[in-house]
Amino acid sequence: MWRSIASNFLTIAIVLIAGVAGIIAWGKNQYSGPGPLADAICLKVPNGATFRSVAADLADRQAVSSAYILKVGAEYEGKTAKLKAGSFLVPEHASMAEIVDAVTRGGQSTCGTEVNYRIGVNGSDLILRELDPATTNYVEVVKFDPAQGAAPEEYTRATGDADVRYRVTLAEGVTSWQVVDALTRADFLSGEAGDVPPEGMLSPDSYEVTKGEPRAELLADMQARQEATLAELWATRAEGLPYATPEEALTMASIVEKETGIADERPLVASVFINRLEQGMKLQTDPTVIYGITKGQGILGRGLRQSELRGRTPYNTYVIEGLPPTPIANPGRDSIAAALNPATSDYLFFVAKSLVPSDGHVFAATLAEHNDNVAKFRALEQQGGAGN
Image 1 (cartoon, one colour):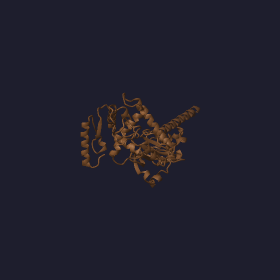
Image 2 (cartoon, helix red, strand yellow; image 1 turned 90 degrees about the horizontal axis):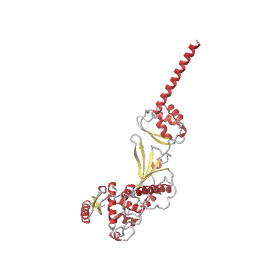
Image 3 (cartoon, one colour; image 1 turned 120 degrees about the vertical axis):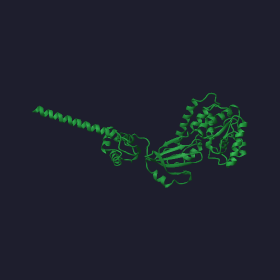
Image 4 (spheres, one colour; image 1 turned 30 degrees about the horizontal axis):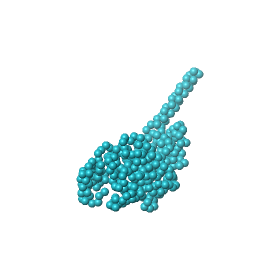
């Protein structure tokens, strides 16, 4: 009899163990397998939230099959104490494990509201936008220029949330003065900007910043990126270039940047100016003359006068020999690369193809050919009104 009892007990124990193992395996599969979420959502985790409240929110929104399993899985992985506040994109059919990783990994929020302060050559604007989880595209809420007055109510209200992300984007060709001037109006930054950095030494790029970040630290980051880019590209430069220093190459890059916004043209434009330097010709480029007038503090807003083209300034390349003393703007990586690895050509001249800047330029090796190209462009100007 005792053998029978022991055998039955052992059988029951085995069944129970198998059942528990099956439940555990099922739970693991629920935790790591694809979730039930049909469409992506933006999950907001407020300050002070717990995994219990987050799990309940996810279950209510049908993003997980079980709030309990998500909480137990997070506890098993030792992540319940690592919950981060913020807004997080939860893709369709995301597993519980993927969701837990997203809300405990840290770093910038991946969903919700973003402020992008774009500093451009002809002005700046501040854009408040929201991520659409379904398309993962940003939808513009409001756009305004901080230089033109107070911020709209939508902006003030939205930026009261702690999980708003901030970004500063520099356009290629902005001057250092323009950058510093614009940053003084960024209400999400702190502290003084300090002295205007050397012209050309700020990297046109997109910078994620935190609310309250010091302006001086952001400018230092911009300068460090440009220094790294210049050093990297200088090390792989073509042989025989007419530059004594990386700074001279940066000056050339800034001229290329201001002459064309078309990436494919930059190596050709660089070749024109390098050919001119090598043949002892003056560069004769309007953007340097304009910089000598404005000192990079805004745009000229009109055409150049003949007296300005004849006037002797350190930046008037119709008068001086060689390069101007400094860059005339902050060039992007492509323009620096073009200055250090230009195209091989015999071109000495170029002029716009049409009144549309995106149409680019037509290049010429001889003055006679160039004059023909200029005559064609002047005819277009007369037909279409004001030129470039």
